[in-house]
Image 1 (cartoon, one colour):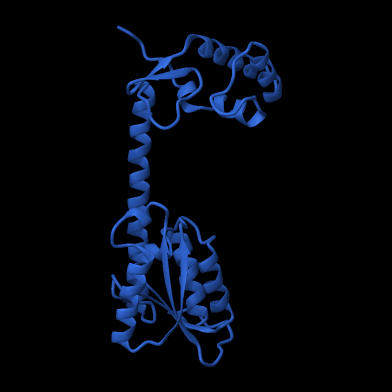
Image 2 (tube, rainbow, N blue to C red):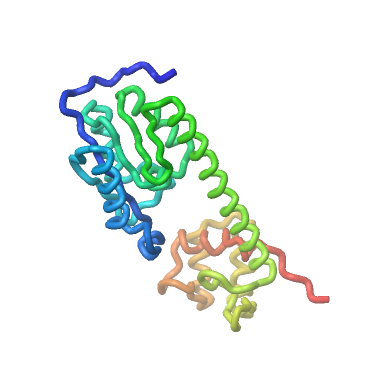
Length: 243
């Protein structure tokens, strides 16, 4: 059963197209803003929909709904001025099942529909809403599975002292390996001892400056840079044992 309408509906409601790319997507063929807009336009022509506006979010992640374009759409849905929103795929709208559920609930209350071109879905029907929810769950599972695999791989790299990302304090790169830099590593151990003894990050930074050790980024130690150094996962990993 659909949620009871609780949003006042206006006359001459609009059909809105929504397109989004993240920074990573912009370099991937087939998901550009223009490509999404073109496919949505073809779909709407075939369906006889008159699109009032195309709203774009460029370089925005789908991990949350805190995006300028989505904020405009949701505000208009709450105002009852939108009849339907057309996206190329659901993941252009959101990758969060919680956010998707909130959006669907709002749309139902406003008697608005969400249409996905690629998945051929229309939330105006109960079946469409069911499938949308199921796809949202699967999409979130895929994202979390990728995150787990990435975390496992990075943990292995840390344990093997393999270089990735920025070079952590206390180490230098030798090819693909991270090798302890004696002077920095001694300073790191001193900083960790002070941290365990209850010294503030500012005090630790002053001590590092006094012994003439500079951070990898910037010219001076700040509380934030000291904290980042001390909480670095590779600094907290046990040293590999040589057999």
